[in-house]
Image (cartoon, rainbow, N blue to C red; front, side, top):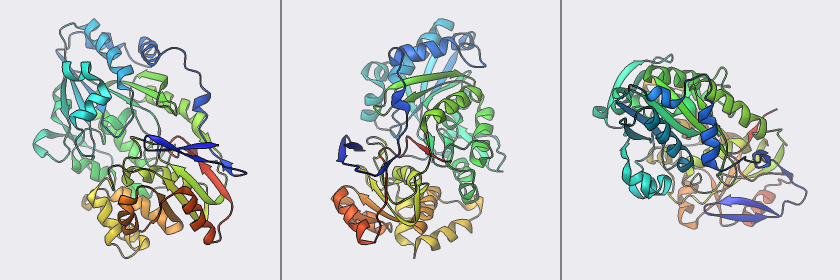
Length: 418
């Protein structure tokens, strides 16, 4: 019996003779607690001095941390970073900068849940706002030609470092590393330029691909402009527990983590007429916007004209008004995709990239959302179909003449490629 993550619970599914694609990360046996794993990695940084050495002589430090949309185990990472920073300079002033990217602001409750009361109450915390030009400043021009405009808090510190986690990413290749800067703490003008339709359309803007990926190239440049000095990135298992950590240089330590994850997450496609998947449960399936990620995993192993069944709770609804309206108001997915491709880089609209990728999926496949009945109309507005249960979704797929089945229990934990 498979357990498909769904919000804070699971959907049980008897896979029968279906193909099942899943990450092998749970086969990795972690040596010690998450705190111990991170501490060991920080004691042996990749292509970098230790953080305690970097802290010497610095009056202040900014740690870029993830926001509410990422299950980064900050309670494993930040205590170790604090300890090393204070070892290098007991008087160093530390600010946590929340990398919201293009997302909504992270709430106090979400920060408390992520950091714990002790860290939350004892830390100076700034939540990045990509929509406030007065809080951001330009520091360069990216390879794409877009201006590199980032949070002044990151620019004005003497030492900029970041925490994060590495997971497959559906157009940046992998999360983590340089992504803490772009899109993490960049102004909207930079995010929009980097996420332009031409880049999203690139054959290299795919899950698990870094080399040749134009978005990745821009992101590396942004991290260099920002003088990102050091990162701590972890890999987590299906239970969102730390199983590996990588610290040091934002390019090579990140790449080491990506290569490590690839060895566990890569799966061969098993083409089928029906592909069932999920976005990994809460908090990753909190809205339709985030769920496009797992749909691309299903896309990679679904026959043309096939059906993708996405099981996600979507507690926050669509996740972006622009994302929602673009699919709701278009004549068809194809018409919207063509509109995206005709939009120049400097005219990229908010959330266009997510809408463009969803449109790409919808052009080739029927998408059925197994989700809360409260968002049925929203789902249908966005050119998808609604089902109250997985059983109902399968009946709908079978009614379309689809039979063969592949299941990806957690669509964001795998890299589907030959």
